[in-house]
Figure 1 (cartoon, one colour):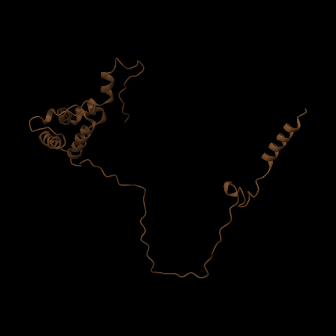
Figure 2 (tube, rainbow, N blue to C red; figure 1 turned 30 degrees about the vertical axis):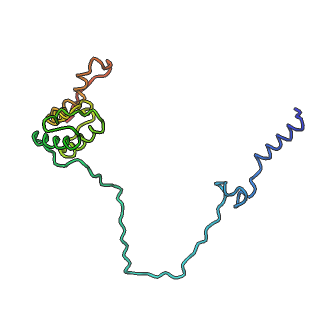
Figure 3 (cartoon, helix red, strand yellow; figure 1 turned 90 degrees about the vertical axis):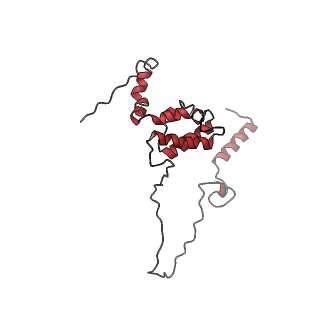
Length: 186
């Protein structure tokens, strides 16, 4: 196969370019600092001639065991009395929602996300009772929040259980989705 002299010189130049080593790549030459595989100069090792010992040396070292203490903002004392919960939530609402009074505080709307967040978070802090994410969408007023807090723990668990979800939504769920009760093997 014959190539013109221009094509032949171009092919030779490409072959020479790809097969030739970089100038000074092994040391700190022209391209040495850009080459990650270039040999680095070895650092000088200084050895002490005499070592002094101090037997009274005390080091104050704090070791990190890797576990950070998680500080919870939720109260550890859970308020169960409905009147006390009502009083705590009333104080929070009157403090955070302008235009509410002793008469109309229970009907105050929680449509604004920031206001709802403040009221619910402060309520959780003070009462120690959490509100699950599933319930947050149903809480539209302060009265709804109080109704949630008035429910017993058994009612809350039953309302948010998977079994209850399957019972309520059986017609909308696909045929292959069923709920099987857990069988205890003792």
